[in-house]
Length: 224
Image 1 (tube, rainbow, N blue to C red):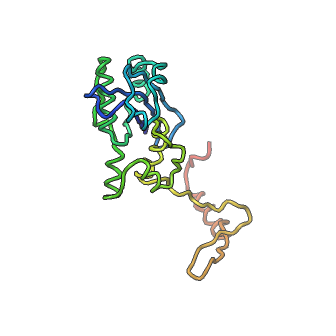
Image 2 (tube, rainbow, N blue to C red):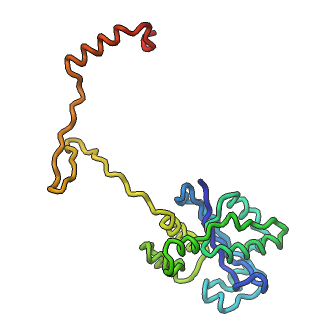
């Protein structure tokens, strides 16, 4: 199952006020685990960068002016996400911004039904607890020490780990006795008790009974 973990950075809080997307980061998951495939772009918003937004992500107007506008990368973005579900932290925010950008380019909007909101997942699983990305990283012991500021790709990578924990976490590995010469054991309340290997060779009586049974079979399939 293919899923895309997605995050954006913007110039402000609402596209209705003329704010734009300045960074998109996507991480591809297959069966809930990262494949190593990512999509990451910085975008020229063709406007100024308010200081409040700059303090969040550190992306300046001068830096972003060197990059392409959204219309130049829109098709590449759509090709990458394809029809996969979108795993987003506070999905309504990012989806509203992305759809505003797509609308400017005359592309169809992304339906909200595609979005899996990890804020909602977290609040359902831990009612009353903080559901920020930093709080969830702390809860699951995920190292976010490199997150001095928000960044779309870094936040998507962290969210991929958080998402895996929210839906159940990694299954513990099976401890299989594979070392030659080490007898298998069973754990009991009074300690570890050796259990000798089971003998599988047939007895002479079982061997004779088997041969007699085979003689009764007419035209066996194993004889050509």
